[in-house]
Length: 120
Image (cartoon, rainbow, N blue to C red; front, side):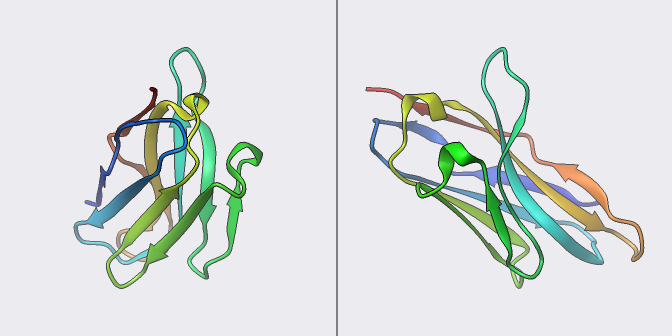
């Protein structure tokens, strides 16, 4: 069974930076795409950034130029560098990974979430 563990959230002032990390552990065969989603109070969960196994990325329009997603395949870890943070970035951030445990079918796995609060 695969598990995702996020870290790096917290409280930061507007204009500040945070780096989120998400490590995949457990017995897995391979990981396809990985991504970060956010969910603000009263809103639906939405995609922030996504990266394929080959390194192709896509971002929500609201974070383009400010956030950077990357991954270390050797460590089964995905990162989200968040710069120039704004109060509207405040949300719970969830890591997602498409994982094949035994080879073949990939399933979506989710982390527990890490809270990011941008406030002065």
